[in-house]
Image 1 (cartoon, one colour):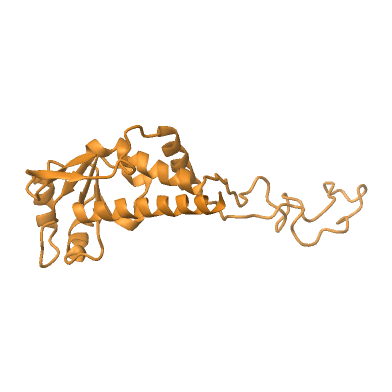
Image 2 (cartoon, one colour; image 1 turned 90 degrees about the vertical axis):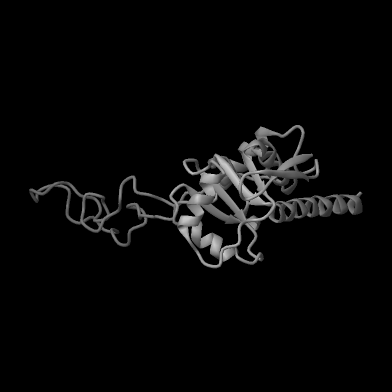
Length: 222
């Protein structure tokens, strides 16, 4: 699969060959949706309150049922009492969505394939000696992406990536991640995804390596 390769001034400078095992001819939207659900359900609610059955005390009836002139009471753990239990309070909640590793890999490849038209691959990012948000704004104007939601995928090992990160982080519609943190949510939340050929090649090598490992294990087990 060939993808267009651009310069930092938005001029096409050639093509980049990507394996068809990464950019799929027939992506699977169902797997992408399942991986998106998995990503969204990993955080869980930790807040917890005690019900009247969990509050300490309340073993004896506070007073007799009749003859005191007071309202009937069976336990001081009642939600009506100070220090009693809580009615309908929050409890820890976790939804588990299981997904095999092979399915997750194919879902990520499918996500890249479905968003390939919104993918802008540069031969290299501009070299900035120091962070400048003004330069980042001009860069996005040149790519016709200033008013769009932008996902910037960087390679942390590249020289100058820190300056690029600090230049873009103040822009409200720009999300910056490193290629190791590629995920479905950020891909589909962005209108334009900008990266360089080194980062996309790293992603390709990582996905192919994981698939190869899976194939080797299955071959041994067979």
